[in-house]
Amino acid sequence: LEYLVQLESESMCYSYADTGKKNHIKNGTIILALNATKLDKYTFSNAMAQSVKLGVWEASLDDYINSIEFVAEDLKTGRKLRMTKSEVLKKQGELFALRHSINLSSDLLDTPDFYWEREDMEHLYQETCSYFNIAKRTRVINEKLNHCVELVGILSTHLSDRHHIRLEWMIIILIMVEVIFEILHYIDKYLS
Image 1 (cartoon, rainbow, N blue to C red):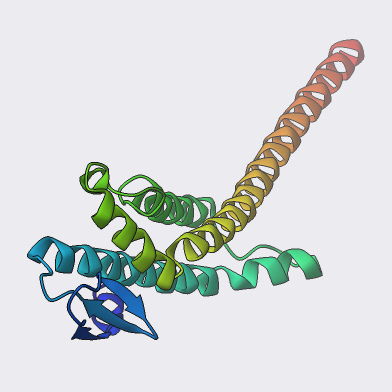
Image 2 (cartoon, rainbow, N blue to C red; image 1 turned 180 degrees about the vertical axis):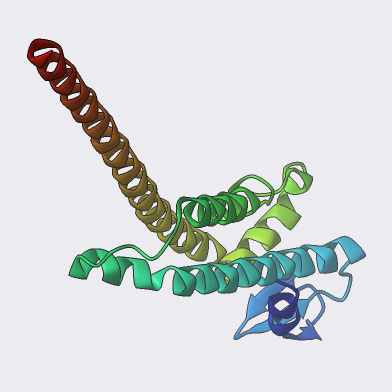
């Protein structure tokens, strides 16, 4: 994960606007009013940081998808699955940790509380998030996560079913062995 963090970045040029202009983004450049406060600058950088965070999670999810790509091919061709139950459980854990980070431990799904009572900054934050397509990217990453959850769920179910079938066969064999012993016991009893 650390190498992903180092690879992901966002950069934008900025300039100061003429007198009377408001803070905004124009043609990929942050335009700051001459009287822009540190909170105004924080608002831009906060949205950029959200974009970088989302980029790290997107790259992390892409790595995850690549690590289980062979599973879909195995399912499609009917080959034996090349994952153990513990590997599937580990993959489920990775997936839920990523999903938790994106949806529960971040402000990607909603505007942070900080901006609720600061309408001008909330608008600026939303404009910057819109520039970086954060809402759309979050929707896409959640769709990918849902697909991965479904795939890993299928794997888990398949491995559980396989285990149950093996147990059922073991029980059937044990019953057959017991029946054979009983038959041998009756034969021995009647021949004696």
